[in-house]
Amino acid sequence: MPQRSKPRPPRVGSENVNTALAHLRLSWLLNHFPPLLIWTLYVFVNGFVTIALLALLAVISETPFVFPSLGPTAYLFFFSPMGRSSSPRNAILGHAIGLACGYGAFWVAGLEHGAPNFHDGVYLPRILSAALSLAFTGAFMVLLRVNHPPAGATTLIVALGILSTPYYLIVIEIAVVLLTAQAFVINRMAGLPYPLWQSAKVDEGES
Image (cartoon, rainbow, N blue to C red):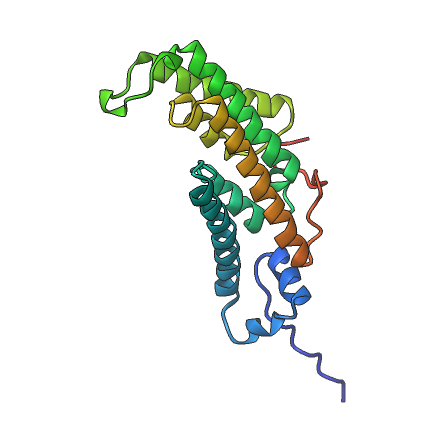
């Protein structure tokens, strides 16, 4: 009688998570829990740890090491770590482009002369600053092949005057570097060949 082939073990929809589970010898979890739940918990735990550490650093140093656009960057690091948009190069340079364009637009619109008061509502200089910052950020990311969508949020944070002093811009970029370093350590510990700088994988829309 022909031997029956062994049933394949359950797998998560993400090859990255499958690799991580195998490396950490946790593949047995897939025999007890739905694969989608395991994938969800993987992203949840890593996102929680990385942002919590930065938030703790922000509290200790009393500096804004946590800001909104770090959230989508952390998500990319652990949802699709091998994508080019998730690489250290694109994350670090993408946010740097956003910061530079946001600060430039902030000055062009004349918002540097006073602290923003959002109770005043939306007015022409703020509209100009926001539009210019996002337009230039997108254009430079395409031109320089630095695809990192969360940088679009970073540039608006600066252009709208939420965090716009040169000191805060440096802190923001340091926070991006720290988050990227955490992602590198976690992904490598999980057995993923996360790149030191640039991913070989091409994102959709790039050539």
